[in-house]
Image (cartoon, rainbow, N blue to C red; front, side, top):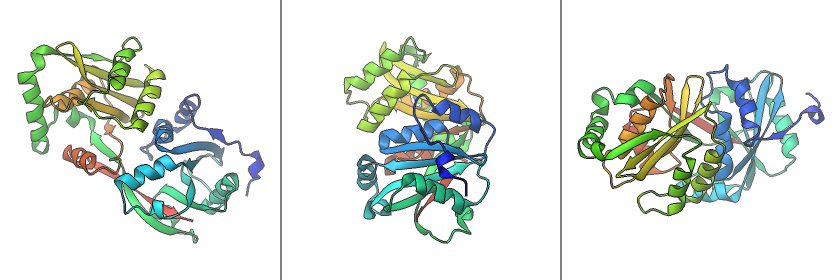
Length: 308
């Protein structure tokens, strides 16, 4: 095993995530980007990374906020039953002995508490003896970009009907514009407005504000939707390889078809030509999961979590 003292662990933050994603740009095996992992911080998992044997290793410190969110949304999740404070997250570009990597991560964690292995496929762990499977979760909902641009096909007829309803009833009084550094304040004002039309949880507000404050026009794009000159929705995504990861999708719930119009038009006006759209996970919410399933994903990544 390599001397762990020679491994430099770095906090994943707004100053370092780009460096990680540059190194990840040549892989299509993982739908997660470093920005996705950075987003976990706001939901209660602080992540560090290190480079080892052509791999990138990730470990996370689990805060009570994460456990509380899990407890509120998924009472059957075994995470809340254990004194778990740390997680080892599936490495990218993995080469070498997995038990060796786990030992390195555990040495950095330096904890006698329970630790979980997260986002590992079962096949990755065939030769690992010290594991107990806890649960599986749907980590990413993946769609074909062209289908979400126009809601093509019979399976998306209902979404197309909602889009047509918006076009018929609201289009003449609406407008949509690309997100730029010059209009970020409009979105921030909406987040702070406390509007009953759009619901936010505390973690979302914190993440969205930092995401907007670190807006990068080279990799991020989004749209703001207006009706009668009032902001009624906004979306923001991040492009890497063949994926466009959508982190924010918010629109007034009282305006029928606004979500479909915002989703479709954002992809069109920002010329998003990636092969796939990643709309992230379902946040353990039955309503969100049902909604994302209704857009007919071509793939749902299921990840396993193990206690070690």
